[in-house]
Image (cartoon, rainbow, N blue to C red; front, side, top):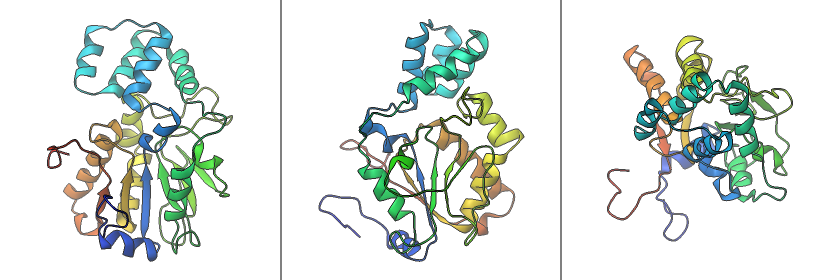
Length: 252
């Protein structure tokens, strides 16, 4: 269904899931991009520039493969900038004094059943706090302490990869580097467990992601592991808004 002229064709399954309170919205960096906050690749480039770090061959190889989480991992460990990297990330993601929150407010409303009246089913991998700056009063949960995303048990904004704030001044809980992603999705698995439960109980709509985002790579791997584990029949459908250039629709 096309709700606005030249807008996306939204499947009826998404609209039905939203009305029934069975839609979870997964928001990425593209949601905050209009406020001059960088996407992940831009964030890494800005952090490198702020630290005055020069490119090493292994970092350039990771960059060429769009593995910016690997670039940060190498930068943090081998350049001996553990504290500086995370401090620079937080500095780069400081919100403007008067942010544009139209998209954030709309997503908060859509992440509730009955257009704003039900429980909140909203997940973000953003580190910024712009959702909390909306006029909506939101309960929150942040990595690594995450709720169980089930009907009638989940009514929060979830910072899946942590967020900037006084509770974590050094950014230790931010999922930034390939090492952080490995802990969250492969060894301790608290992020992959949350994602698995989410797909078991909700139709998921991704907003603000690109196909090369590290987030998408790890999420796809986590879901693929569940499918191989024989629980494919429990996993619900996922949808995504994706931009594309002329002639690139199929590739996107």
